[in-house]
Length: 296
Ligand code: PEP
Ligand code: MG
Image (cartoon, rainbow, N blue to C red; front, side, top):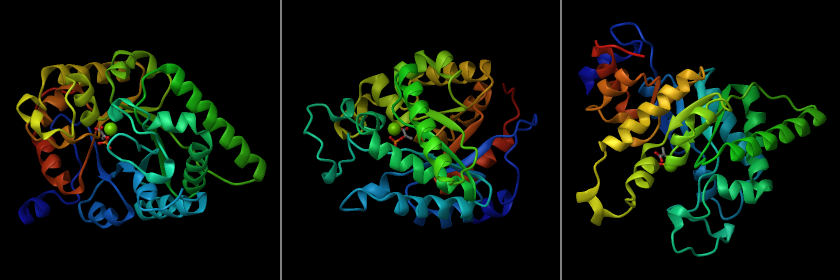
């Protein structure tokens, strides 16, 4: 590991034929930032904002959220920070949301569905995030998308929040909007969705769960769970192709992105970004720098 660090630190993440890959880090709280810096991430590809809600006994205020996002944006000093909006429900329950018990929480009221049914909570987060964007390079991405209509609704809410900030004279930056591709519906519609957003980030943890109908939490299903399932790999290929046709980039922020057995395959498919746990950055960079095949 020490050798890898010496070899890879500060090196550009580029394939032999010259394609630059965005090699970003996944973080789950502000305390992960040190590891992001030590491991030389080019940005943050997935900032799981749930920690703000999980750590607290009640809804985190706009100010609390603003401070956390601003801190991350400033620490990253101009490098991209992609904040994923609230993804609770399913495996992540927060009492004060008072969500009903569900038979099938993974298929229930989670993530963007909560945000769209409780727009005030969503708007508070968007306001905090926009305000923080004045202090760095912040982008936003939305989880568990299944339709174009949903994305249009979200963008309309974003416009409302911007109008409110404009009215109050509060500055914000140019915040790119992307979506997570983590449902089969989003994969199938990725040609249309690509026309609506600035980037795609493939959430292979959920995409695998929903494609193979295998609960990601259930260890008893391990013998049926194949993370390299060809169905999932074909979906990734399709998403990247549709992204490129529309002129946007596509990355992977699920665990599969750090799977070194697949790095070559991802390069061949034309994946533009990989967002991985900070400790995987150097091993993945090494793989990418050694890749000498074609890219798209
Ligand atoms: C995913 O589903 O692959 C993902 C990155 O999001 P999470 O693991 O937080 O659901
Ligand atoms: Mg997910």
